[in-house]
Image (cartoon, rainbow, N blue to C red):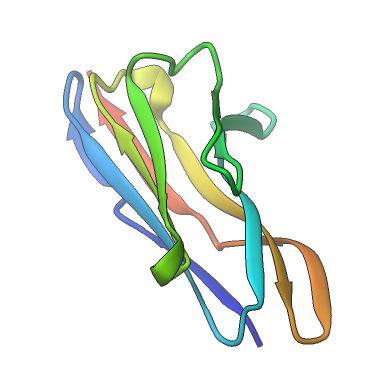
Amino acid sequence: QVQVVESGGGLVQTGGSLRLSCAASGTIYSISAMGWYRRAPGKQRELVAQITGDGSTHYADSVKGRCTISRDNAKDTVYLQMNSLKPADTAVYYCNLDLWAPGTRGEDWGQGTLVTVSS
C-alpha cells in the first residue's frame, strides 16, 4: 500500500520561506505528474504548482516567481520551495501524485500540511 506524506509546514512571518516535502513510500512502479494544491480557510482547493514526469512545471499566477517545484525521482519525492511568503499563502497544502502501484493507478493525496504566514 502506498503512503503519501507531506512535511515542512509551519508558522512563518511575512517575507519568510518554507520548503515543503512530499514523499511516497511503498511499492511504486512510476509517478508521472506531481503537484501541490492548497486550501485556504473558506476557499476552494486550488493548484499551486505541478511538475510532470519530464520536468515541465506549471505555477499558479499567485505564486509565480516566489515558488519553485522540484522532484527527486529516485526518492519518489516532490518539493515546494516557497519564498517571500504572504498572509494570503496561509492554507493547508496537499500533495497530489499521479502514480502507478500494485492494484492502483491514478491520483493519490497526502494528508496535508499547514502553512501559516503571520503579518
